[in-house]
Image 1 (cartoon, rainbow, N blue to C red):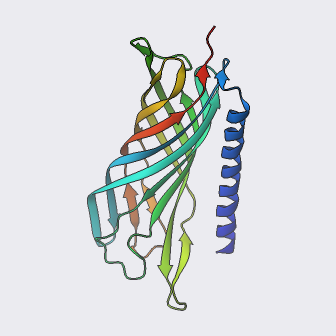
Image 2 (cartoon, rainbow, N blue to C red):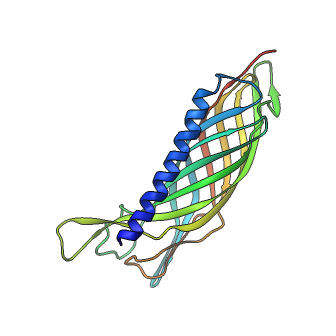
Image 3 (spheres, rainbow, N blue to C red):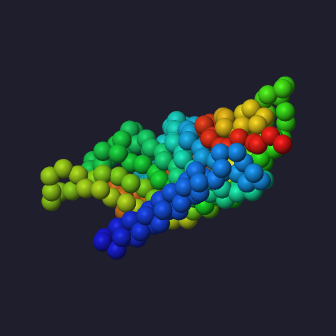
Length: 225
């Protein structure tokens, strides 16, 4: 258990350091973009549905939402970055006895390769603009929950083993023509089945393949020639 906890801590510390580094690079960079771009997003994902299966039961059409934060740095069209996704898992209809039903969450951490053009894809009138964006992500996920133990009062924190995950996304960003700050809307696809080991529900799996995300995107202004 201690070795698993140390792996989780080291992984999260490394990931956090990478995000802070990219975030710092963005702020050190000039406010006006000069052939390079940095940007960050803070938003929400609305899942199409969560499909939860386990030995003895199945839950479908369970609405869910998640939160995301990312930071990117790159050139005129392509950027690399890191993203953290958080979502809750609704287990209200399961027969759990030792796990609080609202205390299970899914954490995902990704490295991102993303197309995001500094110059707009389409112009809307005199000031508005649309930028097309798309990309892929690879990383890992784990579950977190609190569990009641027979030998102690209260609950103890539990983490599932870290496992591989990936995602694809595409969307558009609305902003002014010379300012990349605006609203991004993306369709996300996550093909994997999330498995939770060491949990009270045997053979627990979760699928939430499609989601629609909306986020505030903060980026630099384009310098006039």
